[in-house]
Length: 382
Image (cartoon, rainbow, N blue to C red; front, side, top):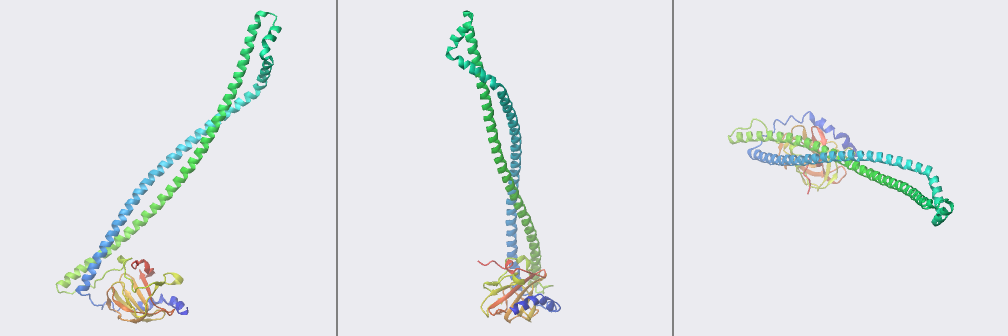
């Protein structure tokens, strides 16, 4: 545990320690021969094809997302229009409910005023009953007027009953209309809630897809930048190949940048990841492997440091250019020298014991001078 703590306190100092002399021997690195240059040119071509396929895939994915966004936008507009219609219908129903309630209230008030008189008249008519003709006959001084009086009483009774029944029918119809309107209002409330939820879901879907489009745009920009960087390196390699073919030496050292190979870098050693990046200030990963197993360069580069370093044991640092470095620590031994050019897959040392005692490799990757998670740069294990 103490050695691990010591490692954490000294891991950043490794760059300060070798920065003063790391690049002294870089200019003396050997020029790659023709076979190596051809291999790098082939690898650059293969990677350019992979980047182009990735660019095509991203463009297709973005096109699909943009089509989705257009459809979602149409759906969102339709839902907004649906909400407007629901609100307009709700306002109309509220108006109809208010008018219906006013009519029902007015009829009920009228009924309250007229009901006593109507009931009294109906009671009197009921008292007459079937014997009304006899009573009318007895109470009518002129027998010639008996039929006329009888018909008048019957007509009045019929009119009163019709008034009561019509009044009651109207009140019943108004109550039924009010119940229907209230049911419609509740239905519209449910429809509005459903429309609002659908609109909210559409809004969230639009926001999610818009964020994905922004992410794809950023990845396409990065892809284009990496493609350009790798294409420039490939062109230099082609110039170097022409120079080698003519028997002349290349005018400058050629190599492939590391950044375009993110996610396509070989593992330095095969094994399970024992410790991951970022845990307890751990700036690399620890890979479990048998002691003595070859540790290989993940990418072409120049040996910037190859010696024992406190907290890292035997340590090799490869400079891959453009402020990108790979570190191989806890080595049993070192098989490269400072200033030497190494090829991808070339051994740089062997697996040794880690501070915890178990054999393994400490591996760190630095891009633009800062540590990054190596698992995002190495090939995904099947």
